Image (cartoon, rainbow, N blue to C red):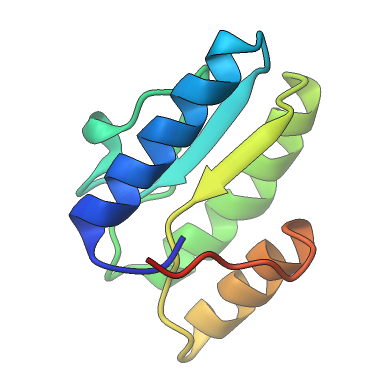
Length: 103
């Protein structure tokens, strides 16, 4: 999810609520700055937005954990596409089938 933070948070929470009504398990990948605003079955804090190395290290672990938790839908904040952030976004886009929603 890419866009203004409150729009991203609102959209993600709408989607996770919709999936919950259908009994589908959801996960969210968010940063420390925004993590408390999300609602989902499994919420992962990848760290601070300005520490992309930490985000990158945690991302792979969290994607595996979502698999172990049988999460059907994963939503994530977008990250900078510079430096290590580019690797993070490449991995997220690959996991999302190269689909990024821009709000």
